[in-house]
Length: 160
Image (tube, rainbow, N blue to C red; front, side, top):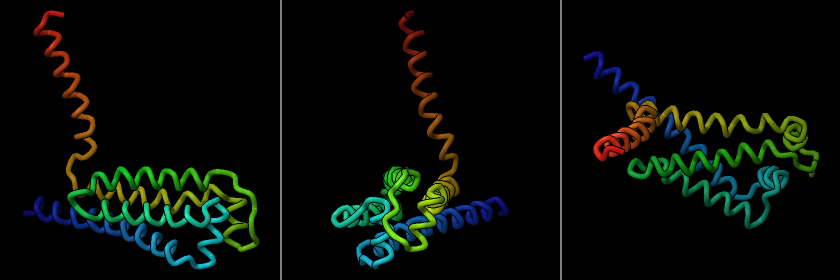
């Protein structure tokens, strides 16, 4: 009974983390589509304006949808990882100081801190996946070991 309760609690916690990560992407996409001045200025600081800003919002929206929909969750996780990895890289890059807004000035001098939100969302997404999919990381390694084991069987059976 306790084991079943623990499993349900773990899965619920994982689903909440997945929902959190997906919701952050949905809100971020909505903000970019709405074009409020502060968000537009911040994205311009990072070098993303006009159609690039809309493209980024669309990528976020599709990624969030794929990640939140259970049958496409793994593909969504791959896209989410790639997207947030790009966000981390964009924040680490040196950008010219393009404004005097406090967030822009702060990020100009402390660009590495801009990586923390993306890293937090990415960590929540993968922690959520690992809580909802038992042995997620063991399965990734197991497929590689299976391929090597089968290759060894083939080599041994043919006497090579």
